[in-house]
Length: 407
Image (tube, rainbow, N blue to C red; front, side):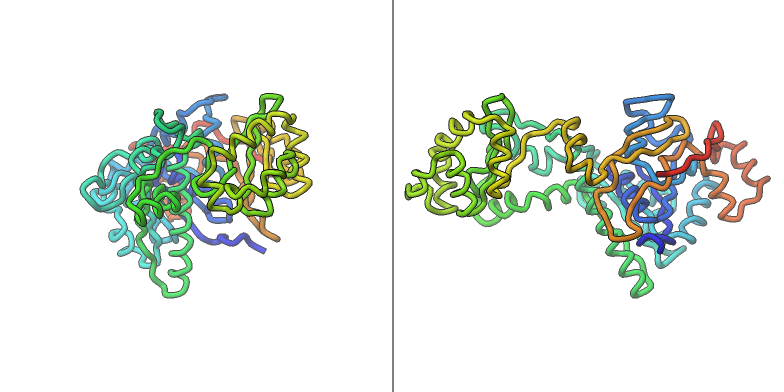
């Protein structure tokens, strides 16, 4: 059977993470994703690490796509986009608001060409409002949205997250908007224009923090490793100087933790008798738990807590997580082959379906690898394609790719 999005064509006009990750997630599920790139390639192609002239970071975010090079400053290129839109189901773009409208490639422009088209726009601050054209890269979005205000230790400079949260949140919501709009188009024959703001996507993920402020008027503060609602729920240092994450979100789990740590006598203490009281008296509770945890080796305590069902996990680095038996058993790492990079180990899509689920059917494309192929599909003859190449409207791959067999 075909994959869930087989037969869906997606045009991607985006760079770096948010838009491209949305395109990749759609491509993993079987969509034909046509990535539109400028003559010098998407900016992500320049990000390290670079091997054999290709960005490994770009490769990780752009699998399952075809590359069509177009200079959108040329009217011939914009006409190609219109022809492609007429035969496509989705367009995902992540340009400065208003930029594509100036080229006649905005949502209303292309829906006039194809009323069923789903047009998803991803931007830092949204398509409307006084700051709509404000630059909004990941760190700036994390700062503006309030996310950074609740990270790090109280009273100190916040720490930015170690991963690109704003871009990834934006990609998730863009994918959600696109899929929901595709369902609507299938049911009523009309596509939608989706406006996804990275700032608003970040705010949406701060559900507890936003709820706290909107209900009480109190500004949420950073808590270090602690949880906003429950205790104990944080990282603890062990005897071997490792860190173990431990969470006890109900009375039963709290009791089991205290028993494993030899602290069961404190279960009768009225300060710790309920969920709410444990949070109110967190300082006193942590003062008991921390020294008890430091008496244990991390592996031994993790095993002891897992045995009784207490949620816990040793803080892993990426080597440890990819080599963990659970990840090995789940086949989280796949091997593919790229025309220039050769064999590559990559993390698979995190979703598993019972059949015909997401996989990697092609590595990320070389710049312009599919320009000729896609133009032919749009009806351009060989002479017309050669003329477009000669005039700088499009570009073909600098070398033919080797035939690769996807795993």
